[in-house]
Image (tube, rainbow, N blue to C red; front, side, top):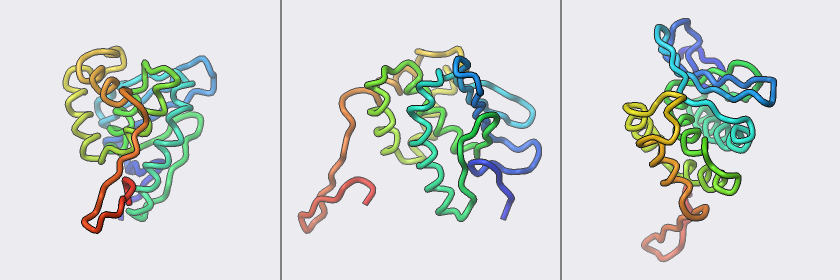
Length: 172
């Protein structure tokens, strides 16, 4: 098994991964950077108050997945946080949805993002990055669509009914 660091990032030099840069100064934004080893792009800059509102949800989601793969779990800390490239793409989708959100919208965005399957998050990343994937592309194209899709309405709690007629909460 390949050695990993942070949130499942390959420990080898030059690997395709994401970096989450958490500054110590409260007035500086959190940056999410895609690093392909030879090409680096800042995907999003988030105000710290938005990052703080999203961080626990993202950490819980990613650590649950790492645990099922029997990989060490990660924890956010000041400085550079390394992430597996697929988890980084998912984090970008969450960050893009929340970057212009109000405090009231952030919980809804986070809850709806949690309900998306990883493959849905990867697809949203691919659609968005094709035309609006850089830090300065706020409120454009798919990026704006993700905000509207995930911030609209209230936090949802899906219920499924099995053939026996008993309700099952999402994720059960």
